[in-house]
Image (cartoon, rainbow, N blue to C red; front, side, top):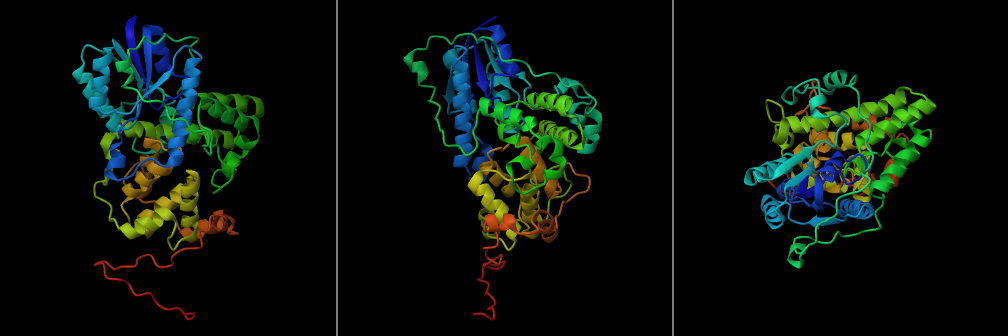
Length: 442
């Protein structure tokens, strides 16, 4: 039994099916629950910061977590400085016997964690997996030998049993009495109530329950590629991103749905998509910083560059491609985009605009409410031809895709995608202005 432990919440903002919290509760006499606001090197590298919508979703999730912890005699602190030095000051001030945290796929977070471990050999550091279907020890291969394609991965892991989700702890150890100077380390959780999509553990559980109560799961494979529509896809990623629900909880409800309503290609395809997410989590753990490098896993670098004007037009939805514009305007307004839309805008950025894929990935990281490090960067590498895709580049024919997924132009019209600049560049390769061709109407 540890005299005092710190519980670091990060990508696991829930009390149910949280093995990390349960371990901390069972082994600690006193417990301090902290959310670390990690400094994100990616935002600094690309001069970006989380969008207002993304931050609101996070704050509401934290507010809900704090409320749930208070029901168990605890509460949540927020620490602004989650850097290596900030973590060191936290440990110096409280002198905990043990620290608990959930494993994360972001290599910069893991690097800071490992640096702190070296500084404090007297502290017991406990890292527990809570963001995947399978434990690393259950995988039928060494992490360094992760299959180089999803298909190979799926064939190996699909037969594996999946552990049941665990219940929330019945009680938690109390926090210690804190002197006023201790409290200076913490900042209040900023609270927002006007999120467009409700965040938090309760909202996540309600959404998943309601989804599987209806018929949407039975037709998922037929509707999942739609560009819009709440029920056309599961939307589970909106809560998986912050860990307000676990992937095992979703799998458990899927199995319950199948037992009551029957299994078919569509319900299997939900599991199939969960396995895709699983693959990218272990992909990030296996390849570390290579997941965010320009060349990725490829032997040669992509033949793309960075054109500020083109990138700006892509971001705001002002390219010569109406469907792409509609998708980007939807993202900027809602903090969300369909999976089909994400593939199309990525293909456009890499192929039609010849832009560095990393800037597209960073823009998504800034704006998506459901931003997940592993899924986002892994998928972008996949589309850019520098990741886990044996076929190389994924170049979509945008006219054909428009004809298939928006044949009557409803989506483009809804998001005003046709209102755009027909000319991609206003300057040439040496920054000379490009003279526009006059139309017959001029």
